[in-house]
Length: 91
Image (tube, rainbow, N blue to C red; front, side, top):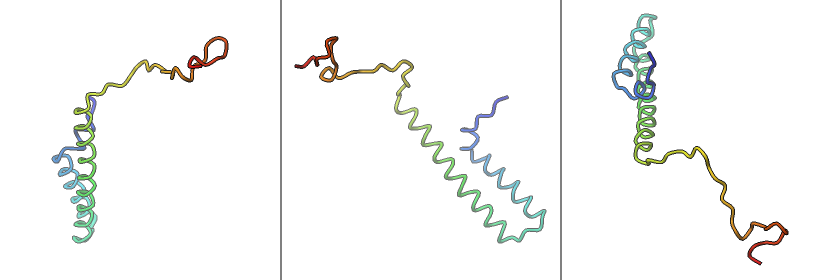
């Protein structure tokens, strides 16, 4: 089963579970309450930034409706293109 990381990283349930797990580990290892509070605050701040960036990227991608070109063509400016004799077409 493939994990959809975009959806996972924007999920509040995922981040709540991560905070609960990290908090439990910190308390299990005897870390002080003020340090646990700081760590959970850092995780929440990072999670909010990650979720916002990914969410806005998804919204922007859906609103543009721009498809990437698979066969881009090179377009030459006629004024700079020389004919077989080496003369410019515009002269």
